[in-house]
Length: 119
Image (cartoon, rainbow, N blue to C red; front, side, top):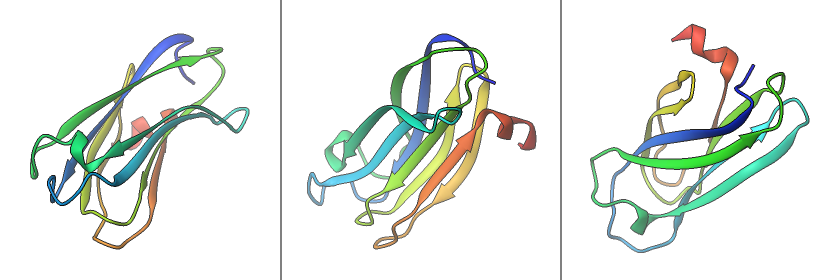
């Protein structure tokens, strides 16, 4: 399960084109899988990336109410950019490894604490 109290999820993501426009390209969120509720969400626009081809670290602070609640980290692609989610990091380590989207593809990645043992 998760660490109680203040935590930070870090989404390490690369974009294929950082200058086309400043539309939203992804949303990162942390959910409480135990209660099936969103704890915090952040939309990232293309302009949030400094340059194409380099991984950017997007920090998302969150509160885990209890140690027996399971955090779930999600990345939603908006379908208008190539993104490569290199990893999602938290207080206890790496939760997911490389996932890619293609232009026009809409999808999402979900990762939970229990997944850390698989990588």
